[in-house]
Every structure is written in structure tokens, then in C-alpha cells.
Length: 335
Length: 273
Image (cartoon, rainbow over all chains, first blue to last red; front, side):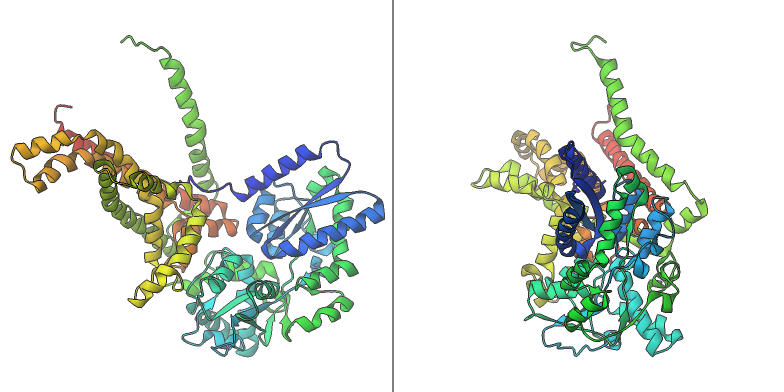
């Protein structure tokens, strides 16, 4: 029905890859395709250059890494539908689980790399207007009447699920388990615009001037601050937030077919190296490596981080309880 | 009957094969996907209160927008065909702009314009009207994308309707209003209805430009295509296909209704056929 849409992204990705294959016939250089989510664009651009240099020095082989970015769930579906990714670096373990359920990689993928296969972490913070005119300090300020909160729809955005779970974790830890649903319900009553993706919410808050506070990935918030000016916005770090662990995995069935399995594994392992960790820190992700973490600790606010395993019993459970059809999020909006 | 140009079997065969490949097979795949799992699940998805609320919004807003387009599209088409004035060709070209613009670009532009801090939005806010992130915003965007359909279907009909007909009506004693109501309007009505139907069909399925301006609040400003995307995001391919199928059937029903009205109207005017 919608005849004037641009090419859907999986199709576009396929065309890009087809073009790349056409160009690369005969060349000896190895190629990797990294399918990632939205806010990692700048990070992986720098990391890919660093890895290519490292790999050339180590093995003498040239390597080019192609990257593709989009909503995490959309990217996962593209891989399931046949986009030939050698590695995936997505926002949620749930999305890689979905790929694994389709048999493209082993179901125990999360045990293949250290730290639950999440080489860097992030968390959820607030972006407020300069001078913090509404005096927002913590999660409980977001449920006050008259505060407009901007956050995307957890049904369509992976990042929005972290936002939701962070608010829930705060309520459960400070108010008690039975108060969490009411708290999160009140928070979403304060949301005037529920964008379909995280970048959309940032635009609504920053460009359209909607809302008093934007709930965002920490690295997105710092990027927004860098891009749109520290004279217009400031970051508020809440007392408690969730440890977001964006995971990585080799899509083994594809990599084996491409003959790039060893290279793909080296590519992801290098994320844990000193240099990989440094680049992550530079792009406002929290490094796992203690040395790099200490170096970049100064740029982040102090926050108590809880994990999804502690509070929600893992992604699978959180997904079915909260975001599945008829789950808690749907109940919050039920009439 | 003998024809001057041969080739009827060949072109008919080609048309049938082509329509099957381009239209029928995708529709069949959609239906197959919708019925691929539990029918109970399918029914639960397409009748859930939130999805039903979105049907009301999507079809209601599309209807409102296409009727607005019918009125203003008629006036625009009339001006462009009946009068000669400087800048007419530029104005005529502008009509196609919504066709040419990618819908996402249109959505972002309209949101920037109508948001409370945008040019138009700020003016409207002064008189207490909010035109973005609510239902009014959705209708505005749908008016924008559907407008060319009405103008472009009406133009050839109005050109063919020569001015002598108006003169004849006047000479035979018709008042101005009668001339319009009894002579011009009936002749233009079939094309107008087609234009409104096309504009409606386009608006029902519109996604790209709406998600930016609607606010996407469940039960209030959540359009059906957004719920299809939500279902895909949950990896519920069956539910997504089911909602798509409901929209398709509803649209087909409405198009059939409009065709019936056309047919009835044609019989009324030319009873001989």
C-alpha cells in the first residue's frame, strides 16, 4: 500500500553487499560484515580502523570491515531473513537469542566471550534542559504530575526496553516490589510522545523542544551533548540505574561458509584488548578492563548499577513478563 | 469482431501473469503467513482492544483527510483547469510535490513545522491549537500525502468538460448554483470519488510520515501500521500478517463500496447503459 517508501533496509543492505562482492572479486583482502545497532556507528568506525591495523601487523592480511546500523530488532530480523552478517553487535541479548533460535549460531553463544559476551557496558541516564529548570535529580522526579518525559516505545525500540527496566529496577529497590508497576505506570502517563526508536526520541527532545527530560543511553546522551552543545542541555545521572550489556556474537553458520570464522572471532576478541577498551571508553561506553575503566571513570556520573539477572532473572524472563503481547507494558496502557 | 491490431491472447496472457506475480502472489503470501499458526492467536491479535482502537484511528483519520482533500482538491483542480494566470504552471507542478517527497522526509518536515516550537505550530499554539503529536497532526500529514490524487484525477475530466456546456446551461435559464449542482458536479463526481478513494487508500497504509508526527500513544495516536511494526519487533510474524490482512480486506471492502456507488451513479445519469 505504501508505494513511496525508500528501499527497506534489509534489501538495501543486500544491494550494498552485492555491490561489495562485485568489487571484491579477485582481491585477496578479507572482508567482514558487522551488523550493529544505531548508537555504535561512530565507535565501530574508529574500532574497525584500529582492528585492520592490528590484524595487518599480526597476520599480514588486509581486512575491511563493513558496518550496518539500525534499530537492534530490525537488524536481527534482517540477519534471520538472510543478511549475511559475519558478526552481530546488538543492543540486547534477546535479539541475538532470536537469531540463535533460527539456527544461525549456537544457543550458548553468550558463553563464547568473557563477561557474558558484552565487552563494554552502558547505562541509562537523563538528559535535561540547561540549568535543570524542573529540578530533576532521580527517577522519582519523573513521576511527578506535570513533568513531561520523552522515551521511545519499548515495543518497537530495544533501547526503550532498557529505559523501562531501569525505572522498574529503581522502583523495586527503593519502594518495594509491589509498588513497581504503579510507579512505571505513572511514569508512562507523563510521556507525551512515544517515538518508535531511540534516535527519534532524541530528535523529539532536542529539535522539537518537547518534554522536560529525555531518558537515554549514557553514550547517546554524551554524544547529544557533544553534538548539540553543552550550553543547551545537561546530563543527570540517577542514584540507581541498570547495567546495560550490549552483546556481541559471531554468526557461525555464515562465517564458516565465508571462511572467516577465525577472523571474526579475532575481531570480537580484540574488543577486549587494551586498544579496543580504550576506543569504547572514548565513545562513552563503560570499558570492562579495569585499567581503561579507571582512565575514563571521570567522565561518568556516580550510579549504583543493578543487572538484569539480579532484578528480572535474565532477558528471556524480562521479555516475556514485560514486553510480550499482554505483558506488563501492555497492561499499563490497557483501558 | 475483427480488430486492426492483433495480439489479444498474448497481451491478455501477459497481463494475467504479470498481475499474478506483482499483486496476487504477495497477497497470497500475506494470507498464508496470517493463517500459518494458531487461528486462536490470530483472532486474539486482530481483535485486541488496542488494535481495534488503532483501526478506528487509521480508518477515521484517512476518511477525514480524504474528504478534506476532496473539497480542496476540487477547488484546486478547478482553478488550475478553468483559469489562465501567471504562475499557473508552477502551482500545477507544486501539486506533485507530495508524490515526489519520500514519506519520512515529509513526516520530519511536517513535524518540524507543526511542533509547538515550529513556525506554524508556534502560531497555532497562541490560539490554543496543538497540531503535532495528536490526532490533528495525523490528519494534517494524511492531507498532505493524499492531496495530489484528487487533483490529478479531476483535472482531465474538468478539461474535457468544455465551457460551452456551462454557457448552454446558462442560456437555458439555469442559475449559477443550478449550473454547478446539476451540470458540472454530476459530470465530475465519478472522478472526484475515484480521487477520494485513491487518497483514502494511500492514507490508510501510510507509515513513514505519520510515526514522526503522531506521538504513538497507545489508544490515542497509535496507527495500525505502527502496531504491525510492533508485532514484527516481537518476532510475531503471524500477528503482523494478520493485522495486515485485516487492513487489506477493509480497504478492499471500501474500494468495492465506492465502485458500487460509481456504478449506481452512472446508471442514474445514463439509464440506457
